Amino acid sequence: MYNIAVVTTTLPGNLSDNDVMKFRSSPIEQGLCACSQSQRIDSSYMWNGELQHDAEWRITLKTTLSKLEHLIAYLDQAHPYDIPQIVYNKETTTQAYYSWMLETLVD
Image (cartoon, rainbow, N blue to C red; front, side, top):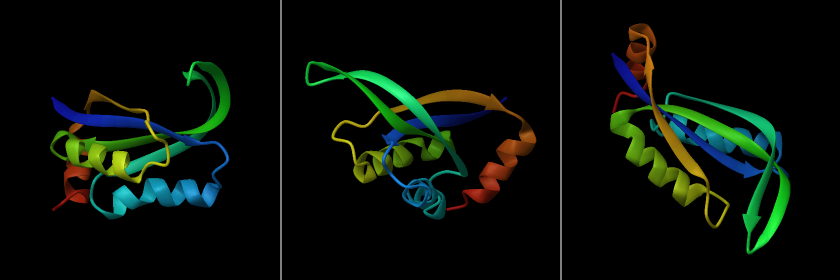
């Protein structure tokens, strides 16, 4: 079995495509994740006691388990939200994809 981490966060929907690309490219350039995707979503949540409905960006990043804590620390520091949503799942992948990730994330 080849285990990886799939990390998800959200960004404000008013960010430009370019700003989102910069946000999700930076951890790749720093060797913290192998790839990332973004998509526009509609979110509902409670904030300061009030129900909010906002457009957001969902950002998905894939990394190795050994890089997970470093990626989370980076996202927490670089994130524009006061309390960013940063969630992750441990997933199983193919040997070929895992090998590609290891080659990509060489220290």
